[in-house]
Image (cartoon, protein in one colour):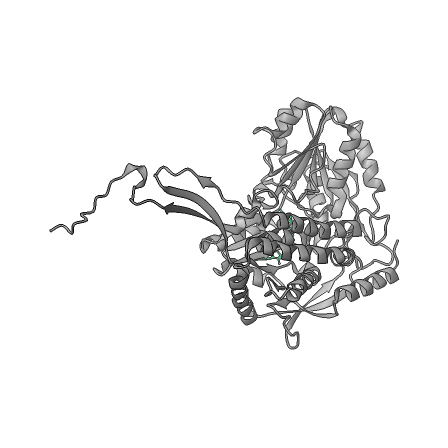
Length: 525
Ligand code: NAD
């Protein structure tokens, strides 16, 4: 177990390398807002409850000034040719590479991920940066055959202006980059409101990327406004100066954001909660299935939108597969994520521990039995941290209320099935539709899972778990997950406005659909 002094020395090093202080500014409008006389929010580490820093937050006036500056910057940036914008994103990616280690560790300190996962998140920013560089030369529009002689018909894509990005605590910077680096390469500027539980990572990231722009003599493109209780988020939802708002967070908050944005006919990209299941069939490679389910359920202490929350297990596997999974649960080390042997770090806040306990109690009330876990841990030297034992339960009905909800904690419900139709019915019964997985080497089972009667989710995985998407594909989910798509593939189109262009280069004015509209050219009577 890492001692308190490890925490201190990691913190000193990381804060030093990233230029963070104990008093920080949480609003960047081209300059960092001066902190004196401002309201502050405090950042604490979920590892041991230690205070990390105070962050000054801006008021309404500061927000308005930031929006004005964002639109001014858009005027300049949108005129830079896209491949040149790509070169700037390349420089940003290189700078992020230089900070991979320290930024990854800051994520560990601030939200409790293991350093491997923290660095993985920074790597995602670097990867999407590379993707954006390639995209800068591939912002293609289609050319269509015109039905009229001497006419050209095609479409082009323009940037929208200022794009709003609101992010959740559990991925402090990767989802920002999936939005921001793609939006920027198209010519947009970006206004970011991070989770108050991950404000320091947002401040450090904003510092790094704008430093590059400053060196290149470019205007600031990446604006930041930290808030305390969603007040800036609410303002952004209602603000017509943000033609697009990308929101990552819970279904509950997402519904509020979506309603406000819809009331002003603003566009949204909604990336909301998941309730992801893995189906393990008798034809599965059980070693692969065990690893896939364990990583999906335990990584990030069950605090991923793609966490495996339901295991749909063929009844014939109860005696062979479940005991092995119980062993994994019993052996998974919970503790200080800075300790290299630890697999499961803390939950983000005390109230998340409360949600863990109440979900388990409700599941027991609905007939479930605990196979492993069900305890809140107080660890030596980490008394202020939020640690729970990952919990494995079975025996409740697949449509029980608690199983249909996303509890953001490491709880895995096991539900048995007899035939594949039943497995799909169980799988698709929940209101969310983010990620899904099947473990099977049977072609017929796999193809059925991928067919229209199989998984109803945005992400479908075969012989790999529900968690751990790559940036190259479009990421997002259906139903209450919100329907948004971001990151790779053609998700970039969400950050652009499509313009259909018709050019007549002839000497006549033929109309579409063969219409005639004769105007008397002699002036008539
Ligand atoms: P949350 O909904 O509590 O907060 C998300 C963001 O919304 C934060 O920045 C928060 O400050 C802000 N916010 C709060 N109230 C607001 C309001 N009224 N208007 C506008 N913004 C407001 O979520 P969380 O606890 O930070 O994150 C966990 C949730 O996010 C889980 O449900 C998880 O599944 C989801 N999530 C989804 C994805 C995805 O890609 N689908 C990715 C990560 C997290």
